[in-house]
Length: 155
Image (cartoon, one colour):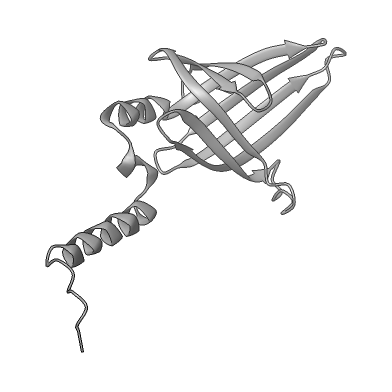
C-alpha cells in the first residue's frame, strides 16, 4: 500500500501564521491597520468641527465632536425663514479607515434609531489644512465643509 507524500515541513507553520494574521485583523481596532499617514489624519479628525450652511432660507449649524475613544456627539441648530429654531442632539460611534470618516448613529435626538433604518454617514475626507476638511459622500452626491472650532462652540 502506497503512502501519500507528506506535505513540506514549512507548510504547517505558514498556514498557522496566515490564520493568526487573519484573526488579528478581525480583532484589532481599525487604527491598528492604518498606515502612518492614515493615523496622522485620524488624529487630525479628533476634536470639534463646525459645519454651517443654508438651503431655501433655512440656516443650519452643526457642531460635531469626534472623541478619541471613537464616540461622537453632534449638536444641530436649524433656523427656518421665519426665525423658528429647532435643536437636535445626536450621538454614536465613528472611525476613520484611511480614506473615509464613517459615523454610525446610536441616538437621534435622544432616541435610538429604528432597527430597520440605522443611520450611517460616510464621507471621503480631504484635508484642506489642519483646521478644515471637505467631505464627499459619493453615494448621495453631497459635499460638506467642516472647520475646527473651540470645544465649547455651540450650534
